[in-house]
View 1: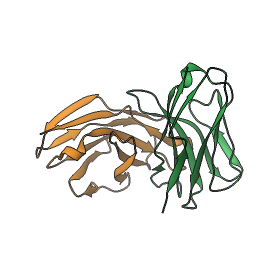
View 2: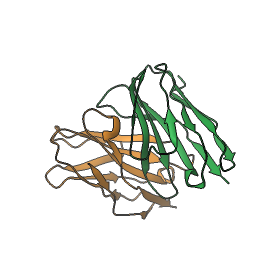
View 3: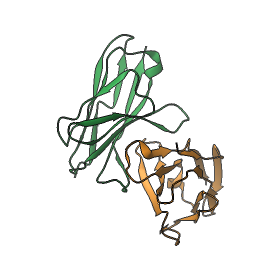
View 4: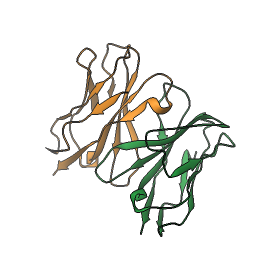
Length: 112
Length: 115
């Protein structure tokens, strides 16, 4: 059982470049989340989805976009990378409203 | 909006000793869920323990237990018989029914278990 899988694990981007962080889960969870974790800080919610075709903004959505065309996949898109987006990104999923989230292993992104 | 506070940025404990990590939260909700997550150096987020606000009994998972004080909005984590593998960041998290953006994390406490 793979759980939540994120790719890539590490990436270096130049300012202005674009990239997509991939996230897929094989647990048939409806809820999926994208968080960022800055050094020494907790997790801040970027975007979330409560099901295929439905997405909504979290606390820090600027500079990011998401889509949810299938239950399994929830990619995060950075259109014009900026140094402020240097962070560790976590994807998570949960089966319902009151259940804990299962996390991927994170993507360490550096924008130079 | 809900907020979660962890007032201890760093803590250390001797192996085999007991340590308590503090967490307080702010909410006007009556029903909600609280979690402690562990993040070891591998970066993986691992659920340690979960508590439903409507349950008066404190949750326990082996060496991990919580002291849930609903009126005080406090949710501390006690680790007994600390092991070297407990060295990690610990995050307290709050979830209001409905999930989504109502899943909020504290800033974390870095715990070091010393041999």
